[in-house]
Amino acid sequence: MTVILTLKVTPRAKQVKLTRNATGTIICHIKISPEKNKANNELIALIAHLLHIAQSHVRIIHGLQSRTKKIEITTALSYDQTLCKLNIPYQYSLDSGNKS
Image (cartoon, rainbow, N blue to C red; front, side):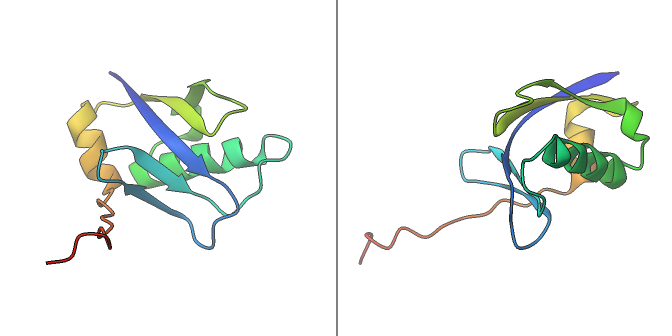
């Protein structure tokens, strides 16, 4: 089965993590800077590591030089199972302008 994930990459982050914002967008924070394909390779390695699959089963199909990427994952898992296994928490921000 093939799973396609759309995500936004944030390079040069302080720590490596995957989160989802309030709209459901997956955000991948990686430490590597986006030079010479290093950030893309780090992203593939992270996804493969979290899913316990070979890196050859993860590839970027769109957005090689963009922060927004489409990732193709060849796995026996469904889309929902893949998200569950990646364990991506939601990251909520409180609206400071909302005062009661």
